[in-house]
Image (cartoon, rainbow, N blue to C red; front, side, top):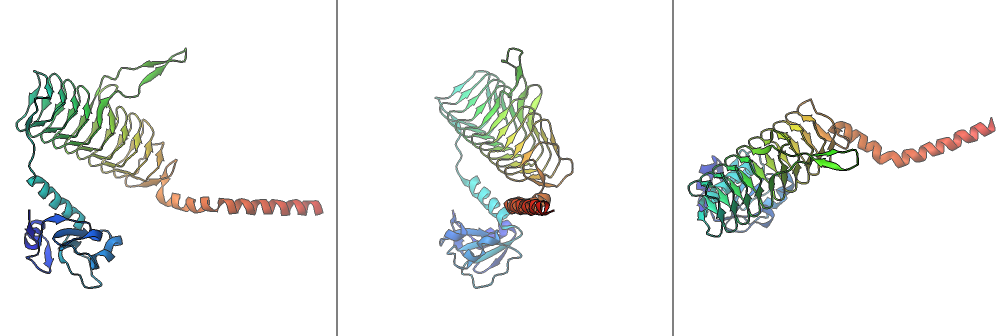
Length: 346
């Protein structure tokens, strides 16, 4: 499909600098811009590319001030990155969506399938499953008994949903995600072995939740493991039993969250963060990459770093000391030698 700068600006409520009739039919990164494509600039680190980019149209923030001439037509918007997302979503809507049920899928007689759902070959759908309209289930997915999938929810290849789990509307689960596997519950016995504790709960994903590839979310021992509306989870994340994650919290890859931990709304957990069990993380907390959180975080809006975690500014100050430790050690040894020499003279 082809759009003019004028059409794009009208859709985004932006303003044009350049040729309003300039046309684009594809997207490109600003450093790889090609004629006939639309690009964007939101990170100042990439500003130098805008002066040499061959992209026909470039989205920029309203406060962008060019230092040199720019060949491309600019569309100024409040937030270039957010506007790009809107355009990509618009294009996605125009793509033809698959519908229908493959004869190579197994569907239990008691399952209920909504209108315009797509179920690919080699999908298993168990007893009493409810699949909402416009849902898409790609190949080799397994949806076990009593699962509920909301409308417009997509499961990519190889997703496994264990029994009794409930997924809301507009959820996206990427390839290999596992929802509702047993929580890690074992009781130690006197003879040194472990007795498995049955995990009788489920997992609930509310609306607009996205789960990355090969992420696992364990079912609750009792009750539910819950991800509230708008939660976004990256690839290779482990969420243990009875965890609860608040609205619009985002979690990056390789993060691990131990059992019964509660995370508030609008939190950010960067890559490889680790959270101990049975703690509470309050709203708006930012946990930096490779941070280990052992205790509850009660003051909202903090940025934490390090292991064990402490506030970012304290970590930055401490890191200066960490780097100086070898030199400090040499100074101490030198002082000890001088003290010993003085003692011998006395």
